[in-house]
Length: 101
Image (cartoon, rainbow, N blue to C red):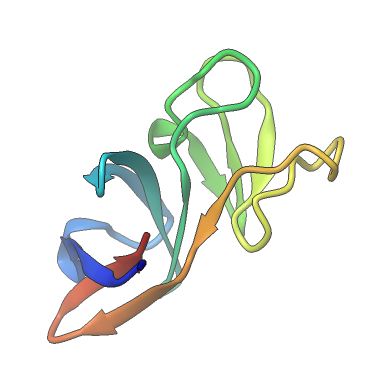
């Protein structure tokens, strides 16, 4: 059964930035969008690029390798919404970001 686990301290991820974390044997890209935290699979569907290192514009992350863009709210690729990454619920507790995975 999935449960919330510690992913990062809130202060570890400034607004407009992302970070890759390993949780439950998964690589998760964790992003801070103006204080709201989003978690998606870290691996781009195209060639496996590290999305946690991508550029963030609003709720869209761009893969640093080949420019594929994904909406953090749904995991959908912006040019082909049928192509999706997994998204994971997040919550804030005691100054930490927790992810359910």
